[in-house]
Image (tube, rainbow, N blue to C red; front, side, top):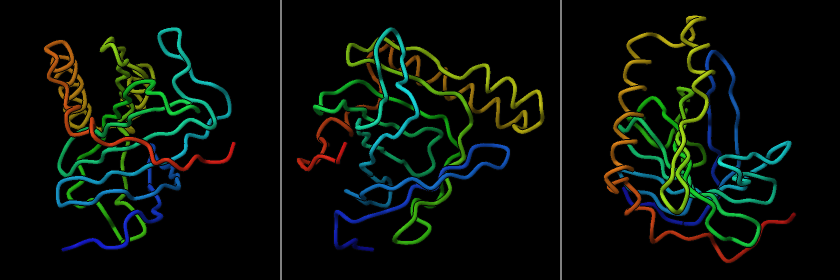
Length: 181
């Protein structure tokens, strides 16, 4: 099905177990049967730091790559000057349908584990404590948790082997329009 009128506004529907739902604004830049590319401003209460660097702050920008039937998404993060800061990978439940409606993504269910990758390909696993807590409280079924861990291990191995799935993200850069500060 052809998708016209791109770029266009879209809402990213993000579920945080057990029952948190956030709706985040974005601009749908590319659509195919296998992936969505969504540009979205980063809005945080305070700067987020990883490996001694600010990776997320208000005014930063993310370009999200959502893949069909894949256990992760990838966000290319940019600072206010639109310099690449790194890659953020959420481990998520696979989406069998990318768009619920032309204006909204299907619900993305976060499985807590995240992987941060610097432009130099250093990496760190994030939110393992939240993952363990969700498992302990029964918010995350064991079989899903096992798949999440397996996917994280697979991504780490790809980063170590320099085969991380960044090739499909390399040609997508931020739009030239800047969001207001």
